[in-house]
Image (tube, rainbow, N blue to C red; front, side, top):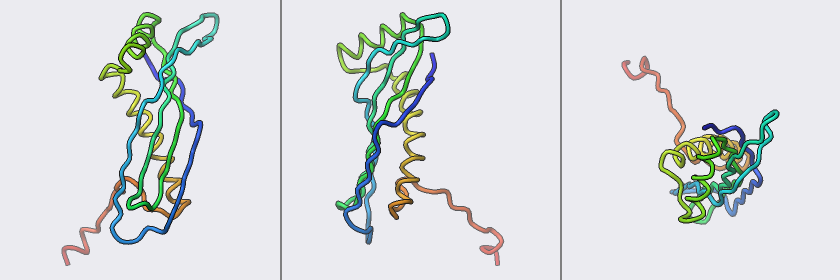
Length: 140
């Protein structure tokens, strides 16, 4: 079982006004659709799963939004693929382990892209950046 592909299908950034004062930034990721993907891997026909997703960053109060949409291609044994698709069709649910794997992959890619887009639009990054302090200056 492995993620073998990732792509963005849509990127939208809207800046309504310049950020000032207190800004509340929220983000979330949602799996929007799960469907079968037929893969040609050499001589073998392999069933895979395509997970469509949306990733949203909201800058409040009504300052800006970043929306990303795309898909992740996942390959597993045919039996596992069929179980994933049946569970999604029935309840729109994924196993906790699979959701964690897909989410981590999507969020890591989307966070990087959202940081790039926020920089281009002169918005603060939506995740806290690492700060390094100079210990020598503090001790003086």
